[in-house]
Length: 263
Image (cartoon, rainbow, N blue to C red):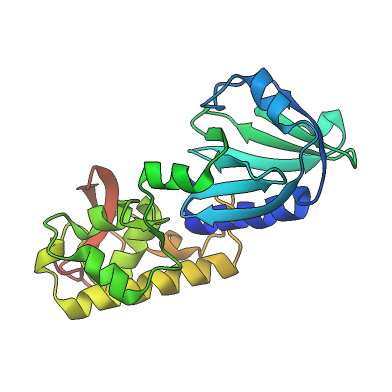
């Protein structure tokens, strides 16, 4: 599933493909992923409009229109974007496409239909309604530590809570815990402050490293972060702990114990 770095890549792709391009029409093949109106209404709202900017908040991409409204693109498990002109290049699972004045089409492809697309008249109101926390690349150390507080949830549960820190998902949460040698099931309130600070710093480090490499979630390189260690029985850097697999915060989780200490 696309997480913050992958959605950042989508944002760069969207900006290059769609900003300042007038939308001549929107072709809707399947409006299931358009969550707050039917496909015809969605197409009518966008005809003649122009995308002027974009905002990414965590895993959410907001495409701002020239009338002050916006389109929310949340990619779910299998959402994708593709710019093309010829019909034979249309993505196999395209659900709708923006057709621009320059004859380019930007298709939204989604095989499993878990994406969420909304036409919004109040972006900030939607963010408040969803309770999205501060973006993980923007949050300060002070705010991060304050959000941790005396919570009795697991470290992984905290990192996955989008109302506290927006953008970290399952894979990057495991990576952060692995780099800090903290067991993902550690209780936040029991984790020493020095480790909480380290978790914050490693989160920023990992996300910045990922963003700089412009990841595409369907084609990670072989040496991409967790690809190097997130395998059952992989030997941890202490040369004795083996990577295990289980459920933490309701998600499939990998860790190496006792190298990753549980607090």
